[in-house]
Image (cartoon, rainbow, N blue to C red; front, side, top):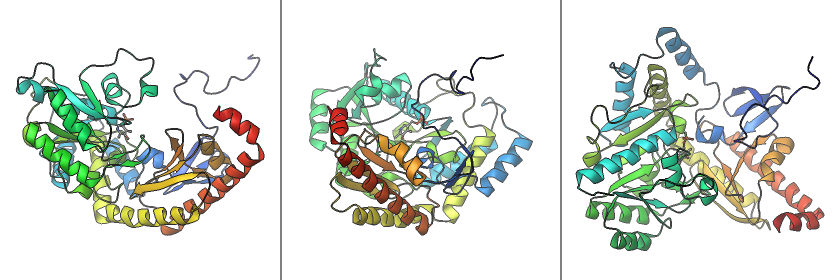
Length: 412
Ligand SMILES: *Cc1c(COP(=O)(O)O)cnc(C)c1O
């Protein structure tokens, strides 16, 4: 007989600081824990379940495809993969697609395309321009591209071949171009998600596009978080009226079924030849059929348009409700990708929001509340997010004011 019950997660590597809540069921923007308590989801599994939990049409497609065929291998033609490639290329104005299982893998494909592009141009040691505070994943190459020393610490030596510049600063890109003759591509998020919901100005993105044209660099957009309606357009770069040479997608593409995609155009479209890259699971019939269904639903319900409207409502609501709040430095966002930057470390708010408000939020870069609600929310739910957040921030700052010594200690 065991002396004491071990915590259920004791055999899991401590990769996550987890909240003590476990959900068993969801519907749309609502979730229920094992005790039947209802929660409102304002993060959508970090921009994944954009069409909400347990979407009936997606659930039916998953069940049907599971009864037909899950996997054969990329040795053979895969009809659903070809269809999804067609759909995505048509939607995004791209020419070719490679499918994988996650965002990091999609970016790995992009980074490999950049290297091939460099070598095709006889650049012996091709470099890729990346951004301060950028986030591109946790594999060694994508971690090396990521601009967050805290996430990189302990994993040195990082992969070489990156030149880093400040985000949204075209002068820095000009300077890097003058200094490094071996740059062959730029990898950038149109809105930095993990980086604290930071928007690149449309003008900057347009200038970056023309610099890439002038130097023969590939413009590679990481739209893993911003893509598929999240910012109120199909893709974040459309707000700037530019087109990338390479674009990566993942998160919302499977609404919870793992899938990633790397799309390419022009000089990047035909860089890969058989044997140079691959993935066992990538592009399997299940994931690709779900991807097609996600696009069907997003198209027929104009989900990007809905995200634009709801995003305006959320941003306005928050700006009004939090106006003059002493802890709030800024409320910013695009579509349903919204950040509330506080003047302090606010990681405690994730647990408080769950316990006090039954609301799922995330905090990024320690001091920015990040909201990524499902794009199928209704207006009432958006207003509800605003109300619960306003209550949360009010009670949290009251608690801070009541314990100034502890607050100062934590900050010291
Ligand atoms: C989430 C994310 C990634 C990594 O995706 P994974 O599926 O976790 O590997 C890469 N880039 C951006 C912008 C992301 O938001």
